[in-house]
Every structure is written in C-alpha cells, then in structure tokens.
Length: 596
Image (cartoon, rainbow, N blue to C red; front, side, top):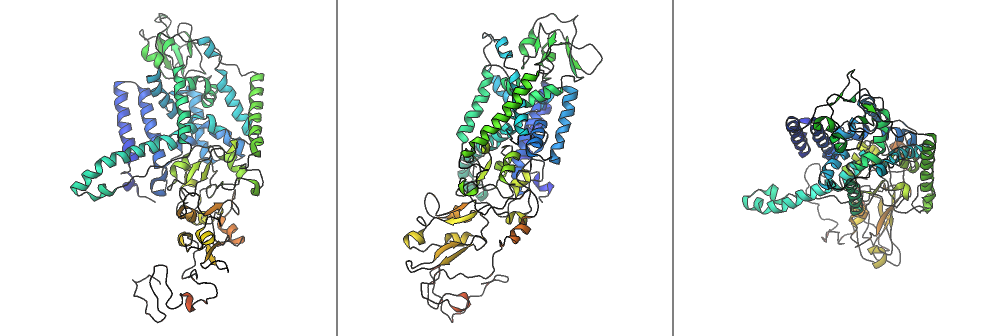
C-alpha cells in the first residue's frame, strides 16, 4: 500500500488543494453555493484521477456513485443484492428529506458542468420562453424514474442512460481525462527540447501516453447534445429529464428547509421568477413548486428588497404550488414502460453477442474483465459508469458498442489486441461500486480465467508460411504455448494448452502479424463466479496457472530429430539468439540467484 506521505505528491491532490483554496476565495467574494460547487467538482475529479494511483486505489474513488440513492435503489432491485457501500446513499436521502434538492445545486458534478455551459449558451434576453409548453414536459423525469424502477423489477439496469452521476463519471473517464492527458503530453513536447538543453534527462525522456476509448466521438456527440439543451432553457436536463432530481424532489416535498417571502417587502418585480434556474417560482414570486426548487438561493441573493429567505424557522413559508401529480396512470405507465424497455433489450438478445444465448452462438470476441460475475448478473449489476475504464492501467478495458446488444451497451470488455491484461493488476474490481467486477486478490485474479487463446492458422507464420516464430510463447506467462511437428512443416507449430491459458492476452497483444492477430482470445472456458474462490474452482477444473521453472520446450527440433539430454538443443544447433552451443561447452557464470 502506498504510504500517505508519498501519495500527497500526486497531481490529483494538487488539484484538490487548489480547488479548495479557490472555493474559499469564491465563498468570500461571491456565494456559498459556487464555493460548494468548486469544492465538489475538485473532489470528484481528484477521486476519479486517483482510481488507478499506483494500481492500488486506497482512496474512496467511488464516493459519489456510492452516495447516489437512485443507483442504490435500482441496483438493489435489478441485481437482487444489497452492496453495503451503497448504504452511504442514505445520507443524501436524509439530506433531501431535510433540505430538498440541495444536492442538485450545490454538489452534483453534472450540475456544475451545466451551470458553466449555460453561462455561455444562455438564450438572449429578447427571446421569450414558452413556459406553458415547457411545463408540460416536466413529468418526463418522473416517467424516467418509474421506467428505471420498472425495468429494475424485471432485472434490467438502465441507469447508464439517465443517471447524472453515472453519466458524468463516464464522460470524465472517457473524454475529459484523456483530453487532459493529451494536453499534458502536448505541453511536454514543447518542454522536451528545453530539458535536453539543460541536461534534465527526466524531462527530456519523460513520456505521457494518453488513453483512448472506442466510440469517443459518439460519446462527445452525446455530451454536446446534453449541453446544447441549455440553449432551450437553463438546466434543461435538471428541469425535465433528470430522474435523480425527480427522486430527490419527491423526497423533499415536505422538507422543513423552505423558501419564505416577506409580503410587506416584496414588490412583485418578478426578478426571482426570471432568474430561477429550474422555473420553480410563479405568480410574482409568491408561489413556488417545492419539488422543482433546487435550493440554489439565487432568489435570496438577487432580491432587491431582501424579501426572500430560506430557513428552518417557524415563519410562514411562501405559498406552494402542487407539483406534478404522480397519478395511477402515470405510475402504471412508467412501470410498464420500464418492463417493455427491458424486454426490448432481451429481445435484442437475437444479436449474436447477447449474454443469454449459448456460448457457441455468442459473439466470439466478447471478453469481460477478470472477476466479472456471470453474464446475466453482470449486466444487471453493471451501471456503465466507466470507473473501471479509467482505472485500467493498460487501457485494455473499453466500452462496448453493441457487441453484446443494447443490454450490454457501454459495459466494459477487454480489447486485447490494443493491450493485454496485466497479471499483477486487480484495480478494476477494486473500484467497481456495485460488485459487477469482484474485488479479487492478485492470486485470485490470476486464476479468474477470462478466455482461451486460439491460433488462427491461416494467419500464423509457422502454420501458414512455415516460418519460425516464437513471440506468443515468449510472452505467455504460464507456458501455455507448446510446439508440435508434422510432416508438412519444418518448424515447430504453436499449439495452445487450454488448461494453462487464463486468457490474459499477452500473446494477442504482442503477435507480430499486422492487422488482426494470428492468436486471439475467445471466451470459451471463461471462469466467472458470483461467490467463492477462483483458486479452488480452477484447481478443481484442472487449470494450472503457474509457470514451470527450468522448462525448455524443444521448439527448434525438426521432424525426426531426437531431443538433446537435459532439454538442451543438440550440439552445434543454432539457438534462438543465433549462437552455437557445443555439448561440452561450459555455460557462462551467472550472477547469484539467477538460474540458467
């Protein structure tokens, strides 16, 4: 575990400290809400940045997701399991019961982003809003909330499409963080000549590799659509579409922290009506909708007469307008809509990648992370938040784009041609907030077989061209590649021992064949458990994931030749490095502890 004293030098903590100092400055010069927003956004970015710190996320990197009451409710219903970490969301339930939707205005990272974008995309003052038309759209967020619940009751998790914290985490992990790293790399290219001229070798040879993710342009398009909605109305998402806001609004309808208007001071100037970001204030400022109010306190700060206040006091609150009535038809329609949406995704199981099809008929290249629970349970638990994508040290984890159908959209899978799964890394399971990827120890992760390597013979150099190649064998950490001979080839032919291959993808990643690799990992033989020990299960199945010391495979023996005693090549035969080895030649002396 990384010592805390050393970890404070991580740039994420520098960002956090700078953000907290800026929030204090904003508090003194502007408003408390902006200060809370700056501090919250700094903490959100810091925690996500730390998701893969030294491969050991010792900080609560999933704090925001664990605090999401909508995620906790939907995950519990869809996955039929309660993750203890999600009990943290009860704190925000209590906060909503006391102060309404204050989370939306003070702490929500997506709300901060929308406030910034709305500042630049605001409609001109001369354009008049059609408040009546927009007001008819407000029930949509409650319908989406009911759709989520209805789908969850049937075992489908649709949070990845509409939950604001999940959306913001995914945008940050797959768009903002790679863009920030790319900017740092571009800055490094400018500074590298200076480092070389001054003799700063660390700077001259420092390399920053920016992660890339499949479908990044499409993800960027979705983000732009979300931001451009602010052109229609400020915080359009929060007003009409956010199901978490709808849930917090329902919880906060009777919150004691309320808006109060002094009728003696109020001159009905309507300034508060115009400035309310969610359109919750009506009738010359004296009437407001408690379930729509996000407690931003703009009306308090902007009232020229000081007639508006928020408090827990006993003073008479402002008159409240009834919110959207959740009638029986709305509730029933939303729940049935959720069930229909889930069933539509299940019907999409005709897609060859769907989890519920027999394995031979599924997409042959869909590899889930090591420690992923069985596929139906995995799809019900995974929120598509992107925490594991950000944390992956090799960038092999990628979001799925319809490879497993609509139900698997944005769920993580391994692109092993892009990079292999590092065998000493178990960080994806450590950061998963819902247990869709189990937090495994390194030895358990080593035995969590994710697939089996298969030789594509018409692309493999030894098989198709009778040319000697050892790359896959040299890269395999478990000696799963053995060489065979036949009468048609003069070189050893690689064959995979499935009982020794855990699907790590080192062979596929390093295969020298251009384009698609000549050795690929397929999900056949994958080992996925909801509970229990992977080590015990692997041993029961006869799987061996331990490299054999001193083993020498006779790759270079031609057909009809006998193997040399002791596993060495015959006398005078050329070794892989091109040197001759006589049978009586004395081996060079090696450093202590190094075996030949």
